[in-house]
Image 1 (cartoon, rainbow, N blue to C red):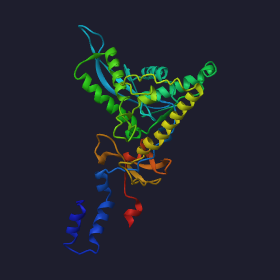
Image 2 (image 1 turned 120 degrees about the vertical axis):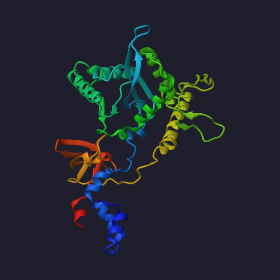
Image 3 (image 1 turned 180 degrees about the horizontal axis):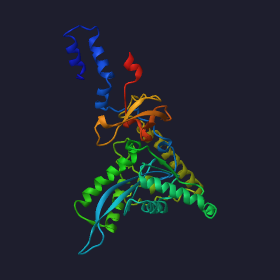
Length: 364
């Protein structure tokens, strides 16, 4: 009756006393395909290293992560007869300095996302690459942007449109691949929900609220500027945008009349280089810590029989499939796999895969 190891061993000992019985009982339960299917335990690969976009120097918003949040219920106009409609939050976050840019979006369509992207580019500059999940609006926007740039390359060559924006999509059902923008959405919703409450704002009012929340997030402390107990300043994302937190008052003019122009330029260059050296040695080193997933428990091979985890479905109803291709990361750990099922081939992250006992495990 598919008992656990302890009950199985107790039942067997009523007839015979097996040698190494406790270990044999655990192995028997572990090799049981039915028990493994009902348990539905997925794999946990080792946490990957930080990508180069997180640790190398570049301009703010050169590498951007995008995510949507919502819906938020707003009024279409003020006064009597106003209707409640939906709007959404689009978050752009700089992968290097965690600078945040928030935009209000009327709906989750391809055209709305492209207009939102155009507003972002007009204010923050064109990014080199965009990281996002596999939402339908993101995929269609990437296809339309690439098609537009390809078809109009000759007429817009003066504006360097041949440098396409590179879209990098995470695998389906893998929100942990974009932890930095998922955390940004969590922080933004923390302030938005407390400010809105149960009230219904207009589109202009909620756009203003998003901008104010953006200013707060870009003023949050990332790292202390000094280890001295007398210094109370911290490094914020606003330092990379305007040189200070966005909620701080402007600094006074500290020009020194005694220095020549050459000396002043050399002094400013020395300060700039000192700042980036400290950023690399002090701030980046703290990002390397792994708080979980320290060991690699995901050991798959091509041809293994696996279950594909599905939401709101019991483990016995999960689809069966076989691994056809594995995608290793820079550290050699496989985190994404192609699986062949009765409905065709799909791509899933390893954390959505439940391995079944192999043939050699059942025979031994």
